[in-house]
Image (cartoon, rainbow, N blue to C red; front, side, top):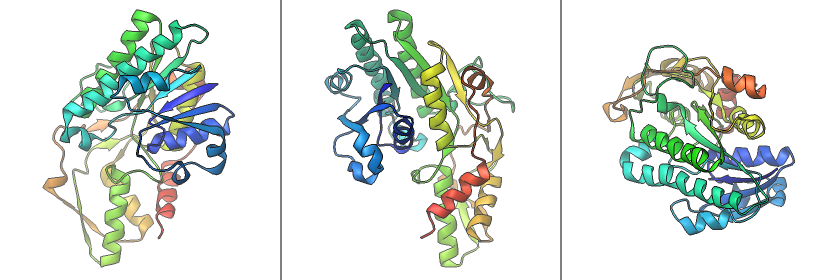
Length: 317
């Protein structure tokens, strides 16, 4: 397939580009101008087989230019992907996530109408669109009740993409990704943030570590499994449908903290820091990925324990 990945130089995008290259696809990597040099985030093989494309989703001309070549598929990852970043500027989250998706979808419709190609557009949403609810695994038919600026902008993302499917027949597939992590993830996310604080505690010989609320339950995947799911959905997802990408098992943030502390080799007490608390935090966010598994045969291959070990090893400096 000829695949364009938007946000290719982001955390998930880097892994997805590598996965697509390994599977033999022709990859165009849409990246913001002024970002990191490709040598810092692409393997030598991927650099050889990937075309870098400048892309700014808040600029319609930039989007249309990036989507002006024949494409079989588009994976739309470019987004304000952090809840904390979205809370700092909710308007920007909507401009990038919802309006940016509308621009990508419109350009894809134009590409399709020009003839010769009918791209599938995988739009990456978030499990946070479900909001709070009963402590049972979420299914795709559950109502969307976002309770954060980030989640609300992701509902807007889905609405914008599916409108193009209804109006123009664009082959839109929605992936609702549950939390995922891996080596190289930003400190804005829970596992890297925990690891940073635990390593600092070990270095400074302290026995108390600040944390936010540790009671929420999360379904946590390895990013390498997530990108495999995205490739599978490009090939087997049904247009107009949404699919949970999840492990199906929950872990409290307290247990996650404890397991990481054991791997780092420190005995510490987590201490609640009010500055790290989030209003409207979802208490239980676990997904049922049965629909994805039935459509594609995908299932996670990497255990949570292995993911955490790999991240600790990657940061062993």
